[in-house]
Length: 329
Image (cartoon, rainbow, N blue to C red):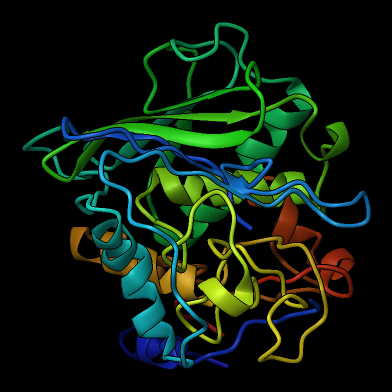
């Protein structure tokens, strides 16, 4: 079915992503304080759970952090949840919203290109293992295919995203000024999620989550490091079903009926949030798969374009994902 790019976002804002159906750590330095986000165990967005579960992290170290004293609130629209990811979270923690400047002028202008290094950089001289680096490559392919941003792997040690595994936990730290991100450090420890790599597990979801922080998203509620759905959820529909930036799995959210599943892509609210941040700069979700595209069985998406979407038939029954389609049939 053809979906007009002009109406895509409006339809998408009220959509519910596939759900067969935690967060991660990130650090921000905007000359007023440092922010560390991850997965609780710490994922400074994720916490460590039993082997059958996941690490759920998202720790945030701020100069003027608020206390987590929310009670579960009412459900709201996907558009409202997306606004919280891009601005509300930062406001709650006394921070300014941030994003990459993809223009060719102004502070930290990237001219449409965001570079990343997984082999050795100013954050971690040894980078990541080749298996984890492959996951990073595939994660950025998803973002590039959806938004049209040119994510380029580089050996330069001062890349815009600098990945490593030298420290415990999973987190992203970033340097920014006047709302514009300069660079991002992402750590996913070598032992994260039992040392697992590959797709369809929490390690890949963690990488997606940390990149989400690096691109400017906060968590889905006023929490960081640890949280309880019953006492900390700002929105009743806060879970992995709607956003990869949530601390709550589908089964932890008692307001929905959905199967526990790891994520193979950002979810509906995440894409709306990225569209809010980068659409005005020309990098909109309307850029996603603009040709005639078949998803799942008999797909025409090649593995060089995306291992995840070329092999989606293998993940349909076991993971959660969101499909974007800008135009075509």
